[in-house]
Length: 146
Image 1 (cartoon, rainbow, N blue to C red):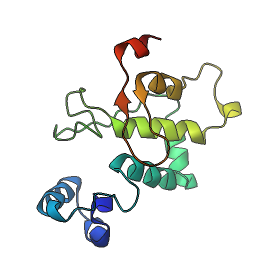
Image 2: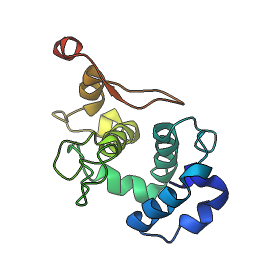
Image 3: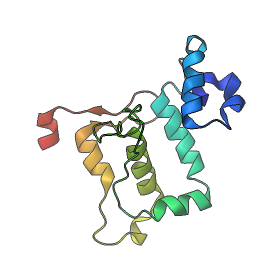
């Protein structure tokens, strides 16, 4: 939420996710549609996560998940874009971003021979934006079978 309210970002730092979402709803008419210049929420979070997991301590935690599928679970069921929507039917953009960043961080020489690579699997099913703008969008069923 902070990139939509960049001038007020500091006031979001100590809020819970629910409190931040509530504050964002109250401030919706003042939201920055450029997401602090990133162009989209997906590009903003991608940049933030790359910076966060560029730090060695955070990177090691993410790398410790191996090649596991990462699912961002939302027990409230309110977030079906970044999480699983509480029932597994959400888009899980956060989980996808973390899997992609984890692959970027892991050196091919340090991966087990039988490691699952998620980028090819995700790219076969979604148009994953590079750089600024956009969000992952499902490819047609025909493209997914190819």
